[in-house]
Image (cartoon, rainbow, N blue to C red; front, side):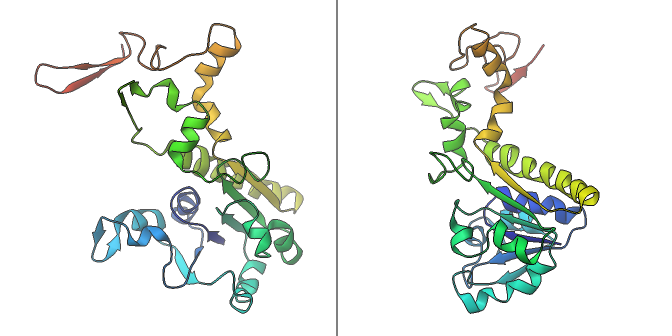
Length: 243
């Protein structure tokens, strides 16, 4: 049983995979408004399609987490939950009385996952951001950002999914195995920014080996080689060549 407290992408998609695998996922949403993705376009029969893709098969309850009486409705649920996934800014869950230490008192075997931009502590922990911010501040975006007068925004949400959802899911599976062996819960702190560094292994290797830090599209994996590049064709299309 999974309780999901968050919205948009990283947490909901991680919980979605668990739902696809058979978990009972209960999504906690704000009254009336719900997950902000509900009101975005495009829609089919009044339902946002992206929201449906990320939340299919889940259950949903409306609770105002700032209302103490309303929050009491959560206690029986949290007492019998295996996994909590939350994606609020660091410190919010503690102020609400729903942080790991608080939940652990009523459910010692809980597996509690916090997904944030820069982790739960440190100088950047309170800085708000989105995918584009994380891939830029870590340096990933600068490795292949297009021409100087025409920078390119990547079409994939790398930080949310690749550095948020997937690390959360992998560590949840490890924590479940650990609980089988030790009968203990776990706290998992997922930083999307830190999770981006594996995507830059070649750039980091180049820099740390004193071969010079890579810059915009100057390495063979980012457009700096004719044998791994994109070429325009006579019919105004493009061909991706990776010989």
